[in-house]
Image: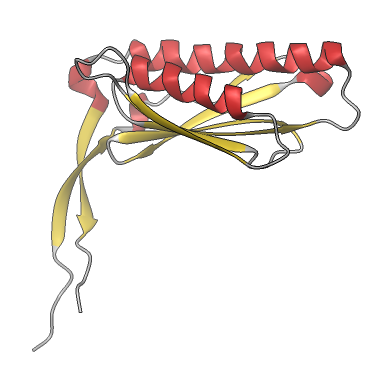
Length: 153
C-alpha cells in the first residue's frame, strides 16, 4: 500500500507583512537586522562587517507574566550576547510571539568609538524591525499555508 504525502494546514506569519531588512550606520559601523518567519515564530539576524554566529537568544513573550521566558547562548570569546538578548526581547514584545535572535558582528581592529557606534546601530536596526512588526494588525499577522505532513516510519 502506497502512502501519499498528506497536506496539512499550518499557521505561519504571512510573508507579505514581514518588514524587509533594516539597516543602520555606514561604512565599518553599518549593521543589518533582518527577520524571517519560522511558523508562528520569528528568527532575527543581526550582522555587520564579517557576519557570523556569535550569540543566540530565544525569548517567548510574557503572556500575562511580568517577564517572558528566555535563554542566551554566547560562543566564547564573542561579545554579542547583550545584542542578541536585546533583539529577542524587543521583537518578541513587539510581535507577540517567540523570537530567536542570532547576532554576529566583526570588524578587524575596531576602535572603542566604532564599537559604540556598531552597538547603537544594531539597536536602532532592531527598533525599526520591532516598530514595523508592532504596526501589523493582529488579523493580518498570520496566514494558513499547506505544508507536507511529516512521514513517520
